[in-house]
Image (cartoon, rainbow, N blue to C red; front, side, top):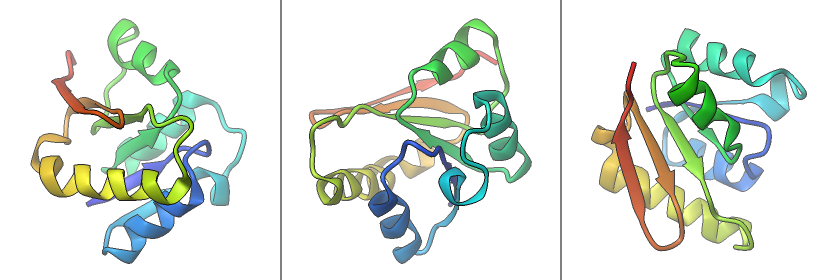
Length: 118
């Protein structure tokens, strides 16, 4: 799968996704500090699902009705980076076919996948 990882995503998550064969564009490596709309546009241009820990993307998708290829919102605060990476990879293995065109929230306890409104 193709992913764009927002700059707030742990580098270990990006490394693990690449290690298991996913294409990942990492904002922290390319264009740190760009606005959220530019990150979303990058994901759309690359036909990639956005991985972020920034709740502002929920506003862009649901209130402003921005088109996306899919968003995965990570709510994994306080966990070690390696455990976060494990959870993300496992979530993709189990729910990967549901991620395109969906807004997904990953917490340590559950995965919530909702189809987007656009």
